[in-house]
Structures are given as C-alpha cells and as structure tokens.
Amino acid sequence: MRDDLIGLFPPGTRLDGDGTLLIGGCPVTDLAERYGTPALLVDEGALRARARAYADGLAARWPNSRVVFASKAFPCTAVYRLMAEEGLGADVAGGGELALALAAGTDPAALVVHGNARTTAELRAAVEAGAGLIVVDGFDDIDRLERILADDRCVPASGEQGVLVRVTPDIRPATHAAVSTGQADSKFGLLPAPAKEAIARLRGSDRLRLDGVHVHIGSQILDTEPFRRAVEAVAALGDFAVYDLGGGLGARYSYDDHPPSVAAYLDALIGAARGVLPATARILIEPGRSMVAEAGVSLYRAVTVKRGAGATFVAVDGGMGDNLEVSLYRQRFEATVATRVGGGETCRLVGRHCESGDELVTGVPLRDPRPGDLIAVPATGAYTYALSNNYNGALRPPVVFCRDGRHRAVVRRETYADLLRRDL
Image (tube, rainbow, N blue to C red; front, side, top):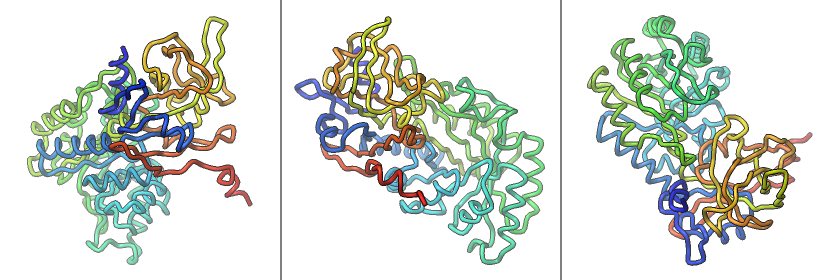
C-alpha cells in the first residue's frame, strides 16, 4: 500500500533514509521549517514534464495544433510563466486571469478568453491586450464585442478580432454535476441550433472574424468516449479553420481513480478528429486539472488528535480555506504522516475551520498520528490555490516550487496585514 500511496504523489517522489517524503528532491521537514504550514508544494520538474507530454503528444498526432493551459485550475503567475516557457498558451476566464497571464509574459496571441458572463470592461481589456481568440458564449457577447470594436481605438492591428463560438453538444459525462458543462441545461455556450445562428451572424460581421468553434463538456472525466462524441458534435456544424476541443481529462486523486493517460486521451481525441475534422484545421486543447493536479502536494501540521466516539480525529492547521474541493465536490483525497508513510489506524483528517463539513479526508490510514506531525496530501495542484479563501481569517498558504533538491517560494504566505489592506 505504501508504494500505491507514493504513486499518488508527483513522479519521482521518494523517501529518504529516515522514511521522510522528498518532494522534488526536498525533504518535507526542511520545507516545513523554511516556509511553515500549511503550504502548497509544487514539483516543478513534474509540472514541466506534464506540459511537455501534452505539447509533444499533441504535436506528434496533429502538427497544426496548440496546447492552451486552462489556467483556472492554478491561476498563479509562476505557473503561467512556466507554461509559457514550455510553449503553451493560456485559457483565461475573466479579467483577473487575463491580468495574471499578461504579467507572467504569456504571448497575448496565445490567449483564449472564456467566460459565460464577461463584462464589457473585461472584453475590452482582452481586445486591447491583443488576445488571440475570444470565445463567444452567447449573442450578448457578439453585441458587446461589436460595440467595443466600433471604437477605432480598440481595433486589433489585423483589423479583426478572432472569435470562436462555444457549442453545448448535450453530452453529460460521468462526473460531479458542478463540473459538468456539456449538457443541454448548462449555463455555458449555445446548443447546436442557436450556435448555427451565431455562426451565420459572425460570418457577416465586419470586425469579428469567425475562426471556428469551441466545445468543453466538463472536468474530472475518466472515460474517453464523451470526448469522441464532443468532437463529432462540433464537426457537424461545418468546416472551420480552428476547432478548440476543450479539456476535462480527469486526475488521479485516490486509489479508485483510473484516468486515461495523456497518450490514451490524445489518441482518442485526435483519432476522432481525423475521422471528422478537416485535415487543414488547427486544433486547440485546454487541459487544466490533469495538467497540474499531480504536481501539487499540500503539507499540514497536526494540531490535535482526538480518539473516541468510534473515530480518531486528526485536526490540522489548514482545511477548507486551502482545499475547498472536498466541501464543494466531495472530492476524495488520500493522506499520510509525512515522516511515517503509509498504513496506520483509520482516521478522519479534519481542518481547523468552524464547520463540521471541514473534512479533508474521511477514512484515511495514518500511522500513529500525533500533534506536531507533518501530514501530506497528494494531488492538490488543481483548484486548491484557485479556490483558497480567508474563512475564519485564515491566511492563504505559500506556493513553493521544488526541483532537484532546491526550493523557492513563488507566492508568499498571507499576513494579517494583508487581511486589513483593503479596508477603508
């Protein structure tokens, strides 16, 4: 079981001679001493390797293509910068992610701008930044963009703004309802009939250049078949220069999760594309969760251990403030005492926040847990940073990149002064 548990951590994770976890070659005891807890540790080498696996794998199967990181999974400036260094574009949802991507040096032409309710100000910022593609989520987006582009000061150098129409294909994959986006009652995109109307309207626009269509059916999808059907759905709308096939491949959080490999996912996706899409088209994909989840590890310190009432509660110094995935989606994680890895008594790993629902992992084996122990939770690179919050006045944790035995903070821990900074 210990080997199975280690397999949930970033590739290359190992134990030192004392049985302590090493993330990116760095003992977690050293990291806790230097940066405190809770902390989000990122194996930089593993993250870069994942980005290359996606980029190289897609290019080998469909040369006219690009991987665009779905940055809502980990909207951290250092992560945007890393993705740009690896040649990836960025999918941004809203003005904040746009600002972060640009600050990190992302090529504006490699930006894909998403969102179901973007304001005029956000769309204007995207146009003014030179964003390569803006995804039209509905007819109001067309109205706003045409008004923006009627101002000659906002017209891109090319004279046109490239757009994609987001298509809702009425596909409901097997995933949590909160992260399913392709079904008929989704708030995102347009069903095929109104999508055709939007396409026809855009083809007549003087300032909006219809480059193609976009589809995204959800997240944490562990089966390739829904992706095949989504490709077929957008192909039915006609021939375009660009097809953005979205993301959604699931990550392995727990022993029961068995997502397809990146290679298997790309084989299925591009296999379907070869059968129904024009050979000259450009294909974009937007991996998010599956890009970053495995590279992240949350490190906590146990504060209290309570035995009784049929359960052993191990409470740590973090919780739903730094990992809201459990409360929102009932996502299952695993955990271990970082200096006594694997095995032990069945515990309820709970957080410090004043909510009974603040549980990180229920029914997790922890070996002889004691106050002061370091507790490591793997596969936390996706959405934990994005959803972190200040509930109970908690301070959001630092982000620490680890690689080849070296470490550096890329986001500092919040301070109480930060909590007061916006007060008037």
